[in-house]
Length: 317
Image (cartoon, rainbow, N blue to C red; front, side):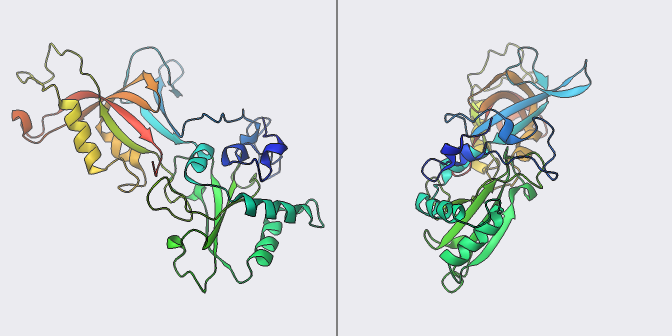
């Protein structure tokens, strides 16, 4: 269901609403009758920034299927797929420059050709509004490691006489333009330009574009269940094993975007079992296997199994 055009005006538009802009159909955006993002249900304002989906193998169909909320046996290993929801994420870490957005809206509406592509109107607007400025960088998140559920293209414009390193430009020294992909095929179906002149950040330092596009992952200890039969014969498992594992993993930062561009790849080698019925609020219970290399009188190479909670958060949180 596309976003109402009144909600796409400069005063009302958000990245979340732009994720459902009707970009129509085209040869390069083959998506069938309902395969395009703008044909999906509206994204609620309360939508989470991150979610985790658990996939398991269906023996009857011979296919992998999503198991979020599944009531049944836990899956040995399985797959956990983190998703960073594009619209809510961009609205959380960035703020549209509504004054500049309104200028472009008026400029585009007064062009001679009512069917002029956004790209042509954007080029003309930037040349007139920012003479001498250059596009210092551009890209498409489709070409990068990403957990985003919708990709977007981006441009960063700066005055080359004032800014030598665009990635370190301060607020007001750059103009970033995003266009969200609302079609099906990545070759087409991009919405109207969104203008930003302040760094994408949620506290701390920011950048002219959101540099990281993957969920940040961490573990939380949970109340251990009574263990009448130790998993390692003759060794009593300490009550704080889950806390110990979570603390070591989190302090090492292995699930952060700063450590890896693919944090889930750092997490999955530890996971031995996942529990889909616990999937809620951006987290899911898992069993992890690990060693303490001699701690608690465990010989190197022996593995503890402990249940903890895997949680996801957005970059810049």
